[in-house]
Amino acid sequence: MNEKRRILIADDDNDLRSMSKEIFESEGFEVIEAANGEDALKLALEEKPDLVLTDVIMPKMDGVTLMQELRKDEWGKTVPIIALSNVDSPEGILKAIDSNVTTYLVKGNWKLEEIVGKVKEKLN
Image (cartoon, rainbow, N blue to C red; front, side, top):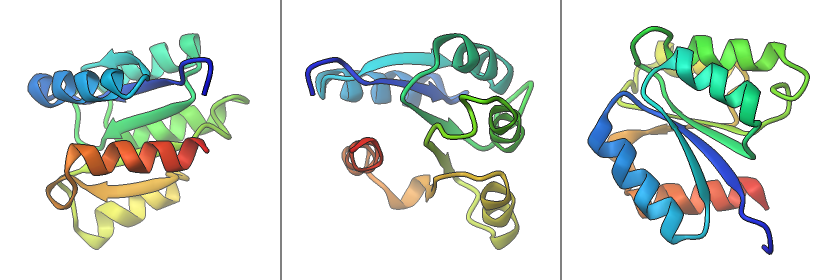
């Protein structure tokens, strides 16, 4: 990978977002951050990252709506999206799948290092 792959991390948990950013940057990624769905949508459409990693439950616009809005855009139709959430109910997962999420991960079941692995897998 010669050029840095860019990812957008959308999560309202500041600590988790900054830890994620640190780990991804140490793995050679360029990271764009957003603390809510509205900012994430605006940044994604402007910056067109290689992958979007989004929380599902966020202020201003939730992750499911963010995914639905991204999928309306020509670029957004194909960008890989990984939804990361504490929501592990079948309804929550189905809503994300209906929004054409590429991968749905339940936060409590994954370590950050494993999430980095998933991101790399989706980008290769």
